[in-house]
Length: 186
Length: 177
Image 1: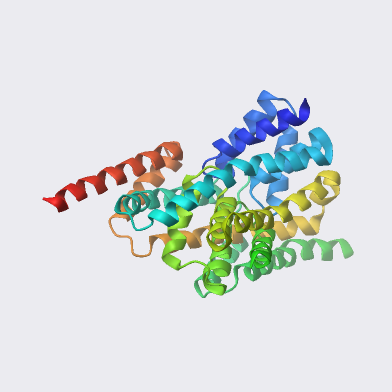
Image 2 (image 1 turned 30 degrees about the vertical axis):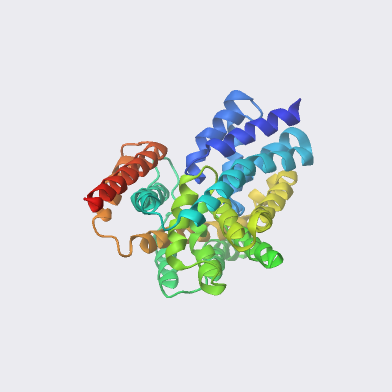
C-alpha cells in the first residue's frame, strides 16, 4: 500500500531529522532514493533545487514533492502531515515541560550548555554555504559579498528581514537578468 | 488570537527561504519585537530547544509559540500557517516543474537572495553569542568538530545536555554544604 509506505517513510524522516535543513538531506536521500527507489538520484537533485526556490524547510518541500510524484495530491498531503507529526508531538511535550520547569536550575544549566552547540551548528551551516566543497557556491562574485554585508548591516539596524530579502531578490534581477536582457535586445 | 497566530506564521512561512536558520531573524522580528509574544531571553532558550528536538527548527518554534499563546489549538494554528505556503507552492511547482526552474528572472532573483539568506543565518549567531564569555571557546571548538571533523551534532548536543545536568547537580550539592 503506497500511501502507508509514504506515511511511514516521512514519519521516520520527521522523527530522526535532527539539526534541520541540510543535515536532513542525507537521511531523506537514503529513504527516498536508496530504500524505496521512488526517485532517481538526478530527480532527487531537483528537490534540492526546488527547495532553494521555495520557502519552507527542505524536509517539508521534499515531502510535498515526493508525495505528489509517487501518489498524486493525496500522497503529497499525507507525506507532509507525516513529516510534521513527530515535530508537533515532541515539541508540544517539550513546551509543556519547559514552561513548567523554566526556573529549575538543572534545566537552565542544560540549556546553557546546549546553546554554544546550537551556535556552532548554525555557524557550520554558514561555512558550508560560503565555502562548499563542490562546484557552486552561494558566493559567486563580489556582488554576493556586497549583498551579504548590506543585508547583515540592515539586520543590525533592525530593518524588516522580509523587506531585506525582497531587496536582495530585486538586486539579483538588476545584476544578473538586466544585462542579459539588454544584450539580447542589442 | 488563534487567527492572528495563523496569519503571522503564514507570513513567516512564506519568507522562509534557505531552510530553518535563515528564518530566525524573521520570527524574532514578528514574535519578539512586533507582537511581544515572547521575551527576548526566552526566545534564545526556545531556539535551543527547537534545535535539540527532531524536525525542522521553524516547525518546532511555531509549535512552541502557538502552544504558549493558546494551548494545543494555537500550536496547530501556527504549524498550519508555517507549512501552508511551502506546501502550496511546492505542489504547484511539482505540477509545472520545468518552466519555473528554467525561468531566467527567477534564477537571477535567487542568485541575489542566496547571499542574503546567509546573512539572515549569521544574525542569530550574533544574538546568541551576545553576553557569552567562556562559552565562546566552546563555540569555536564545536564548530571545528562539526565543520572540519564532521562529528554528528546529535551526539554533541546530547553530551552537552548531560554535562549541563551533571554540572547543575554538583553545584546543588556544593550549595547544600
